Length: 330
Ligand code: SAM
Ligand code: SF4
Image 1 (cartoon, rainbow, N blue to C red):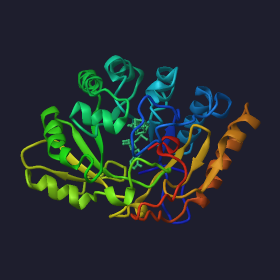
Image 2: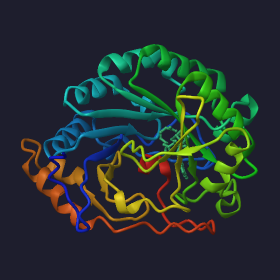
Image 3: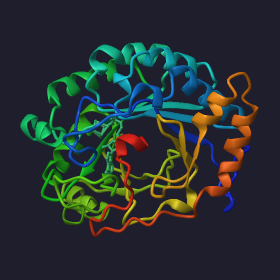
């Protein structure tokens, strides 16, 4: 039973917070960023101490799960200290989403600092193709990172794949085999219209979860489950493997009715919905009241009234939200 003090106007309890720790990244994935990005100046982003304060305050309001994301969380200097700090808050679940590029050297340290689970993004197993999707990424480093994460003994490791029709949909069977070999879960994500990108037309490349499922069922039977990881994914199992296959389908299956999440950007903007602009500035409050968290608590509780009932992504490729995903934090 949850003890969260955060409930919105639609009766949904918020007990899961995604904290973006940087807008910067060593990759430039085609669906996430433009090739040429301008990042935020240092004074506009929350310090690690401010992020830790936000985490502590959410936990005092009943938050049970925190996910660190970005940008690429592992390029933020001091990230291990922040993980160590949040690791002491007694969370039921403490996870990070990463592109895996730094895991070869950091996985073990993250685990020892108290991180419980990792989501690692992987869109292709072909090195050239991987490079063209990420623009700068080196597949070998990421694969080494995945192995280091497996060795470090996390409670859970999951792969995340954004599927683009004519882009990497041909990689789906191979990615499923890879996940089966490694004994980890994999989730396929429909691309969301966040930020204006020029590399492709989002309407044209949308590959729905139903289409991805059809690709997989040519090779493996997929049995629906009611398992819930506390996030938006719906899971399937294969009869002969422990690997679960998840689908996040913002276009084809709206998941808003069970939404238990909010996000905080690295600028300290509390976003009540991934697909809407509703937000509250926590940075002003953090800086105006450095000694006490009371005002911060009140602001977060009050913000719940702004959480919209649902998002309205359309699949015609139009940009509906101007912030890029690296600002939003996945
Ligand atoms: N850099 C880390 C990573 O790539 O895992 C964490 C941040 S990234 C923004 C979080 C997740 O969002 C990744 O799995 C990425 O593939 C996904 N993502 C980025 N842009 C997206 C978009 N437009 N639609 C759907 N998913 C997206
Ligand atoms: Fe970086 Fe992650 Fe965005 Fe790719 S998806 S550009 S790795 S923040």
